[in-house]
Image 1: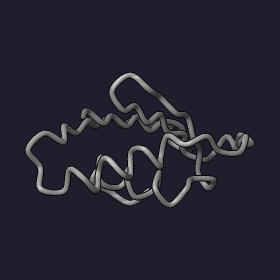
Image 2: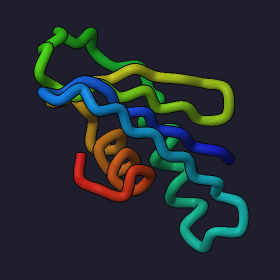
Image 3: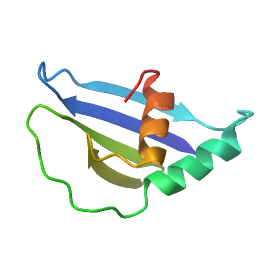
Image 4: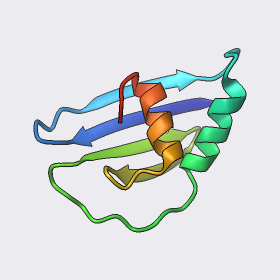
Length: 86
């Protein structure tokens, strides 16, 4: 499974992109579960121009989400893929 995260927005508007392939990883099962939970439909989110927006793509499915309205699964998955706190 390929998991891709694109972060945009924020005060500086700096765009970040990272991808992760779960093939052969010892934590692949955990990552698959997080990815499924992160793609679950959520509540509509108000746009705050200073907040970060995220596009999480798992294989060919994409969800758009924004801080501070991230689910726990989205927050953890973003942190794992980008390698930093979300």
